[in-house]
Amino acid sequence: MKGYTYSLVAGLLMTTAACNDFGDLNVNPNSALNPNTASLLTGAERAVGTINSQVGPGGFNIAPALYVQQFSDVTYIEDSRYKTINFSYNGLYSGPLVNLQQVIDQNTNTGTKGLAANYGSNANQIAIARILKAYIFQFITDRWGDVPYSQALKADQNFSPAFDKQQAIYTDLFKEWKEAAAQFDAGSTVAGDIILSSSAARWKKFAASLRLIAALRLSKVDPTTGKTEFNAALTDGVLTSNADNVQYKFLADANNENPLYTNYVRSNRKDFALSNTFVDYLKKLSDPRLPVYAAPNLKGDIVGAPYAVFPAPGKAQDYSLAASAISAQTAPVNIITYAQVLFAQAEAAKLGWTTGNAKTLYESAVKASMQQWLGTAYTDAAFNTYIAQADVAYTDAKALEVIGNQRWIALFFQGTEAWNNWRRTGFPVLKPAASPLNGGTDIPRRLAYPVTETTLNAANYATVTTSQGKDDQYTRVWWDKQ
Image 1 (cartoon, rainbow, N blue to C red):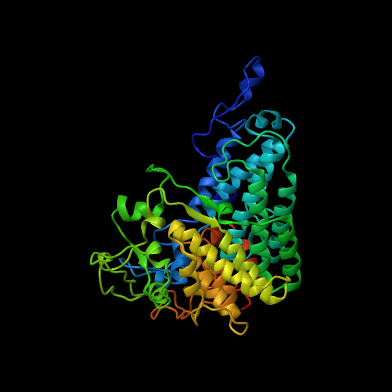
Image 2 (tube, rainbow, N blue to C red):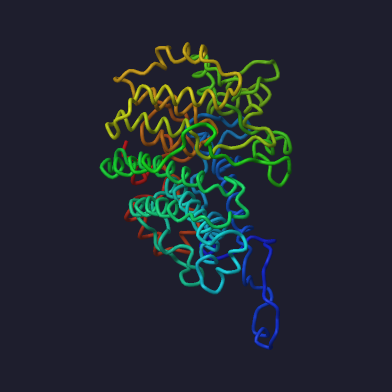
């Protein structure tokens, strides 16, 4: 099955032993004997950048950003009306997940771990690969629900993997992140790490922060486990400042540039502008982040595109595209931020999971987001004015609402994470598209499986749809019990 077989990234550097006897006559010269694990890791990390920034119809990042109305499409008014129902995860299995599994295998197997150690200590390579592998699997299960997990990535041992329950996947993800963080040793640094430059300290914070966010997903479905995992992650050490933010940094290179830049400039398509839902809300609050998020239209005004209105009442130049902080060729994309971690702590405090002060943590989260986006333009005076507004100020009665609304603002262009939190909490309160194209009436709650599952993995597909529910955009994933 294409989605789960081993397929190495083209162009990998190969390390091979010299041919000294006739035994090599039986070796396929085109087969990858000892992959360059540094190249495998780099390839997987580039995919992490892609899934957090991808645009275009049905894009991994833009579709959920449209669902939560941070963006609106302005050319083809389709995905804001939920036209794409089936999304494919096959490339994630056959690309970055296979790469990461190869990194783990090459650094584990007795016959290859010596050569693999040329690219960093075996333990450090395995630790990074496990953290990223768990991150990508969480990305997949949060979008589709029950997915192939324990039987996936087995190559020709299993071309038709069964679907694991999301609850079981989450249980294993917590284990993977915790064990991987403990696996780092004092050996040589890892080559090919373009996200955190092989800093064990930063990878440990990243892993703990992922556990923290994942634990909060359980707030409705299993709060006991969620509370336990949340506090364990806090103890192990999460992000503590904006300097800890985990980002993927794009380059001034057509092969590795910000996808919004590709859409806006290189392709001159300009398919997506900020939605009027998002822009109007930020205008209402006089939010100082708005001009950082939104570029003025041709008239010099910040104007959101009408959400899911067909036919479009204007052209792209009438509306505000994403500003350069989001859409420049080298603009980084956020994977996880300090503000995100603080919002999670504020919500956990409100839920009684921790002894933290929810109000203080919430205000710190808003401040961290402003400092992150405004940089040197940030002032305490502007923050104090902003946080005192009736629609922003923390009160115990509306704590979850203001946390949810402000997290939505802070997670701009982190579409999947914004959608995850909206599904779980219901905030911000959003109206669905007026005329959906998917046969439904509400905002999507999940993505339907790739159509290849119905043919290449038919028996397991039948089992999972019987167990999880109808394969559409409204069967909720396990933790979505709003």
